[in-house]
Length: 341
Image 1 (tube, rainbow, N blue to C red):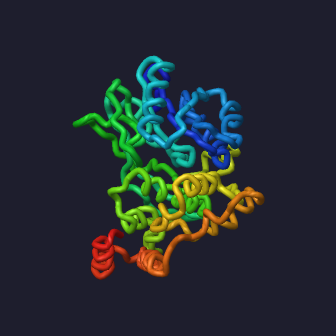
Image 2: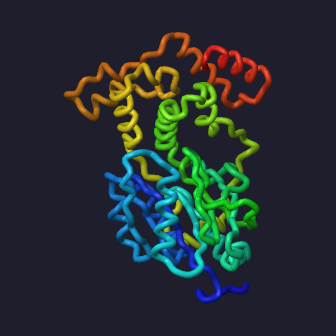
Image 3: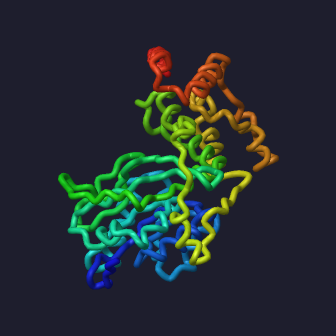
C-alpha cells in the first residue's frame, strides 16, 4: 500500500468540542493520536476530569469555549478558527465529538490515503454507525456524514442544532468513505444517552417553539425504531489495530447521575415544570433526584405536572415509536398536531 510523507499530504487536524466527556475522552484521544497530527479541544466549562485528561496528550491544543449557552455554530467556528490560526499549510479538518471514533481499519484503507491528498475544498463523508450497549453489534445511523474538510478557507455556516461541523461550499467535491466508518459510542452508554435526549427535548421546547411536542418526541426516540434485521456484528478489524496499541475499546463507564440531569433540574427551576409538561422527560422522578442531590432543597417544584390525557399521549407515542411510519400512526399523529401536539 502506498503511503505518504507529511510533505506529500495535508496536515490532519482533529476538532473536538468537549463538555464533561471524561467517561470517553481518554479513549478518544488515544485513538485520535494515531491518525491526527494535531488535536484541538475546545472545553466548555467541564466540571469533571476532561481538562486534566486532555492535557496529558502532547498533540492536544486545549482552548476555552467561554460560552455559557449551547451554541453549535459558535463552537464549530471557534475550533475552525483555532486550526487556521495555529496550524499553517494545507489542513484536513476532521470534526469529531469525543464519543465518535473512526474504525481502526482506516490505517490500512486507501480511502484514508485518498483523503490525505484530496484537492482543497473537498468534503470527506463517512458512514456513522451506532454501537449498542453489548459492544458486539451496531446499526447504521447515517449512510454519509460530513466529518472532514480539506480547508480552503471557506466560511462555515452552522445551524442552530444538529449542525454540519465543517464548511460545505456549494458544489464542493466529496469523497465518500465505505470501508472507514465512524463509531458512535453514545448508545453504548444507554442511560447517559437517555439523559442527554431528555435535555435535548427541553432545549427544543425553549428554543424551537415551532416544533410540535410529538415531532420532538419522534426525533429523540429514533433509537427505539431499530429492528433486529438492522443490526450487524462489529467486525474485528474495527477494533484490532487499536487493541494492538493496548487501547481499551469496549469498557463503558457509567455514572449514577449525569450532568444533563442537573441541567434539566435547573431548567425546571428556572422556567417551571408546567413549561415542560408535554416534553417526554417525566420518566425520571425529578423530585427524588433533586432530593438526592440537595436533601435540604425545595423539591415540590419538580413534580410531574401532566394530566392523565398527557400521560396517555406520551404512552401512545412510546408504544408506537417502532412503527411510527405506518399510516394509521401517522394519521393519529396528525390529529394530535391539530390539538397542538
